[in-house]
Length: 496
Image 1: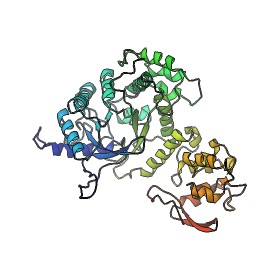
Image 2: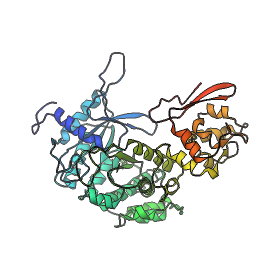
Image 3: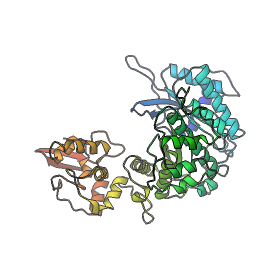
């Protein structure tokens, strides 16, 4: 395990390459260290362990490493840029397999997150990553979760091979606009990023259709415009061409025909054959954008994210607040704070795009291109549209209720189901898990608000912005303390 390779032991390589991988945020959290204890289940290792979540809510621990931090590119925001003088190391495919299997045996991890700097050229790097995955799947018989970061500019055959071996495949978009990418990452182009995204989207759809599943993995609407743009040479078109308008869905046969006409990826020989050995990227694809390294507004960022979801059917767009690690005139100064709160607001807005039916142009405008960091984006939208409130919970439609701050999809379903059996009051809403601290300003029950509250933007913002302020209200004969929920609070939003 500790044999010397190119001057470093495997442990030393792990320390270097797991630390270098921490800037890639396509997982939920980074490492902790806890040894096993008698009478307790599981343990955790510090080097490179992060966490992702399965569709059923399970937390999956992943070994998060780079194959190498050598890189021929000189992206100005990257710690591993060619111009930086830092310790460099490279894992061999067998070393990555050994670490993954040994960590799995010790219950440190359940899967692997593999990214890499670029050695020699994109094809050489991607070939080594595919070799690693192939060894894990065939020689070491590893059947756990694998997330791989594809290299922009690598050949279609190599990216297709990676998709067949991994559960999720990602290509980092890095920056929201082509202008910022050209200025901060001169070795990368938007075409090299978006073109493989197009092909991955189409290949996932073809494989899902081949085994009898809906070709659409996520919330994206696959329409004629999208299908026709997936494989054309103008890779920038999807970002500007999808405008959210509803167009007729394409039937499965037409979709399969369109997808299989492109020979860049090796689709199943017989698309009707459901006996595929392995589905292509069954957990879908995702991407990452760096926030704060360039001058884009929140509106530009979420508009780009919206178009990525609609064009490429992504599972997630991850947002990474820029950490000042390089000194460069094109970047923020080294003492610039990491925009953690801005990153958090963008994640909240991302959920509104994906699950709540909001559009980017509804949340922000050219006149107000940034979110108000004092309140979450849903409240920010609501206080700017007070003409639509309050809504009566006993009669309002699903579409109106889902836009009320403090009411989520689960809460709306509970309200709609419960009101079939009688009229609701605020005490019932509280027991359903509705966050009355926010919702009270925007709803009525039986024609009455919880308090006599003025529907005035400044008053509501000031009331919601003070996260430490507590209010005691009387509901159903009981004194209830309601506290504004924030990122760092516990789960007891309401306590009596």
